[in-house]
Amino acid sequence: MRFSPDIPLRSAIVDGTALHYQEAGDGPALLLVHGSLCDCRYWQAQIGPFARTYRVIAPSLRHYWPGGPQADTPFSIATHADELAALLAELQIPRAHVLGHSRGARVALALALQHPSRVAGLVLADPSAQWRDAAAAPVSPALAQARAALDRGDPEAALGGFVDAVNGANTWSRMVEGFKRMARDNAGTLPLQVVEPSAPLDADAVKALTQAVLLVGGAQGPARYAQAQDKLQALLPAARRVVIDGAAHGMNLAKPHSFNTAVLDFLRDLAT
Image (cartoon, rainbow, N blue to C red; front, top):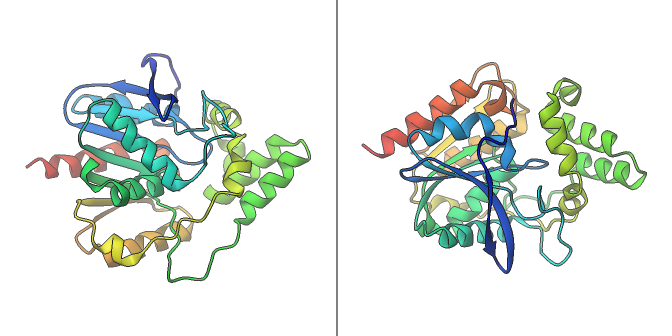
């Protein structure tokens, strides 16, 4: 995974303060939404290939690098979705395809639910999901342990424990330095995520989605992500589903060609 300054970092004023993003290419708009501990740099293996066909917008969500945590701005799925809608409006993009990964896929889904006219095709890569008809989910043990490690002044343990809990044992130790640098830059978001308000999904609202949906998962990913996709596919029987062989949760990093091909094939079919 390579982080480079080839694509400049831009900013737009959203809700009175700057929201940073990378932009490349021309054509229909494609919005990329990163997940926990990540930022716009997460998509370096996707921006170039996608930009051959699409106008790619890869924002860093509020509180993430390079802006950092902001005490006066809520940290929530709904707020992030609203700000992405505002960013599209600021960039004069009436409608975009939206691709999100992990927590970012949950934000992408919220964007489609809260601002349906803004979203064309919807790609959800290992979305996290809580459901309104299910028992309230406790604070994730991984998040709680990460917060405890941060409180005792051990950010490396916090990051390693969280990444391993999400992706599988020993993932952190095997990650390339570029990813670790990005995660360290975003360590300040972990305490915010611990106290983030829950955002349970309503099954009837999901069923009412009219956008074409692609669900993407890694064959070796934690079972909870496949289970979330099972539920979404049951509610959205027309959704297409792709499993990336040889990859776990970070399938776009481990198998970028396979991941990019799956996304581009889906979007190409929408245009025909």
